[in-house]
Length: 402
Ligand SMILES: [Zn+2]
Image (cartoon, rainbow, N blue to C red; front, side, top):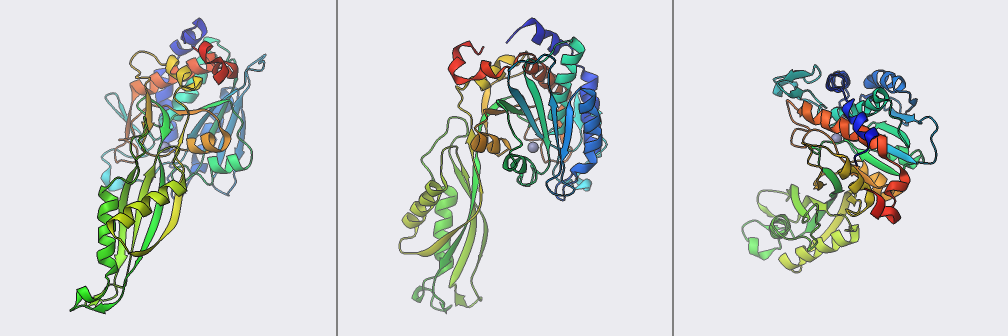
């Protein structure tokens, strides 16, 4: 996508302004838990109103606000809505582990350090800078641009994007989520099914372990097979093969008794397209092969859905066409989940994850983002706003989307 308007908008991106906005957002401590998103709302509302957005703060749970902003271009026709979704919360810090202050952002060379610089206040700042650049260049977006800057992503999204979806507040023709992807364009992400396996054995005298069926011995066979083994034949082109991590084990009653019970909890990472039934059937297959005749039960604890947008859908190709020099712009998959799953799976909104910073930096001490990636992402957003129309990214118009 190279039009004069998109080029002008991209050229108007201000490095200093996107860095300053990232710093301003990082200074607000929004650690979750407990979730302190309120602290960032005043600064954000001021910036959004300054960009000409209509702003609404929704608070499905007291103290857990999300900010909804809408920019309606002058003389807009029916070009649809492009949504940017980003989360305001950050994961907690262990202050002693940081050499830079987590909430007083520090620029060292080309790296801006601070909690949320990569995940994902830098991405939010880049998305907002894109709109500021359009304004400065005198480029009016063609579609409505909506920002959903939400609470609670880091602990599952129930008070943020999931609540907005449940309340019918999300309407868009396409969405970009600027989570850290090192400027790759993610079209698929894994989900997670956490299962507790309870294994039943028989109590017996510890001096004769062969005379009773030990639940711990059975569980050990199961765990080895599940943890190391192939839990699914599925291989996804962007997220690879599903995995299984056995994370917790408990069992037995006394040091001198053959164990009558054992439980373990596993985290089975799923690929798009796998159902819960598929996952549980696959676990049973592995367990039954490893430990014939064992008595056990599976209890599903948590399900986080995998999700994807078809890689040949016109919207990922549209975004790939926007990216500039120094920006990989490649289609990738993520091994972890984002709020994109709610938009893809429940609302069928074509959604890509694209943003500055690395997932290797997210959640770490001394988290940082490359300033060059902030600028590159802001340019991509400026181009997106200058050129997006819903009609340009509908599947029937695939051949004309570029
Ligand atoms: Zn994130």
